[in-house]
Image (cartoon, rainbow, N blue to C red; front, side):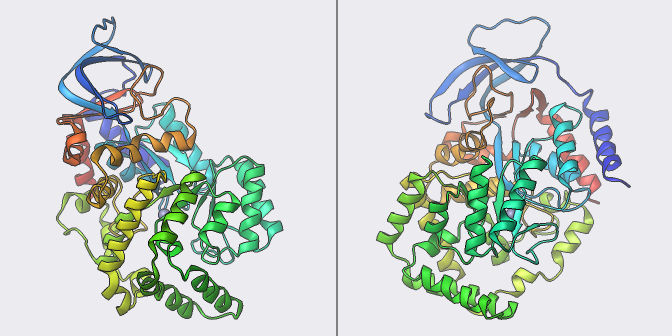
Length: 474
Ligand SMILES: [Zn+2]
């Protein structure tokens, strides 16, 4: 089956059971509006949605020709964002991923790279925006640039400063939202990439290359940073030594196995040489330049083997072929050493301590899961909620954790109709909850309703979507 027909068949199936795709205007009554920025709650409000946008809020709103929905005292928050996902790693991945995001209250995702050509990613984005496909808002930031041969298939490649400039020209021409740096770039090429991105007015997000120091990337103008590991490493008095070791090994043409070994040895070095004062300086520099961090702390679950049982809903909602692939030996686990395994608990504790320091220092955090069919046991939708739970476990309040998923992402992406507030002129991407999420995030696991581009999916409809995913996963 082709990509398009699969997607269409899913949607036909879905809409056959929940009714016509609605741009019906809605008056949602009797809801508490939660202000994530301030922590204030406006009680017993109504909210008018017209053409997919919030057109009014207040206690005394009347409207004609609208569907009235009684919110029954539920708590309304802006829809969640997952700022680091990969939904295009197989021809049919969006068929599963899009509904999984919606049933988990996630109405916006930033894709960070995969196999589909940009034109096909944009076509799906367009179908979501026109309401032809029901799914979260898509930001396409997957223009990843790496050194030859590329860590993943289909990457842009640059091995010299000149090539970096050419690649950025191409990325700009193709219409990507950002340039994504990747791990194996050399420093000169990376610096040229940063300069070219700035000239094109494209944000530079991505991995801090393995041979580049964190403060060097900040000085070069890095706007967004994917994953967290490079921060504890930059808090080590040995960061420069660790980078030099890898740089020398690569210059010598050392084989991949030795490079993995060098990188695996870093956990022990970081644990032994992490320095609080140094760390404070690094985090202050990050906060000052507003380097946005997508931590993906939930990825540790994969390395630790914290995998849900085969019969859990999040496993059963996946296509059988994906479950099977996840059971196969994985090259990332194979690269782990006994030492890394033995130190895992301490490393994770240090990550979380550094994460809390980063947050408290004012480093903007973008909640992120790295969910993908290509990343075993990282689940579209569910893993973002797990990530938020980790933030709270690390010491953030529920409000602070929610801000990383509702307030910071749309502002960082420069969206003009979304900023993490519930107000007229904002896109009607919302989640209605049974309980006040500022008192605990558990309520996110079972939304009363999810509203995406003004389309209201009530609990029964979300349940229908779950049942359809379960049936598709058989
Ligand atoms: Zn990723």
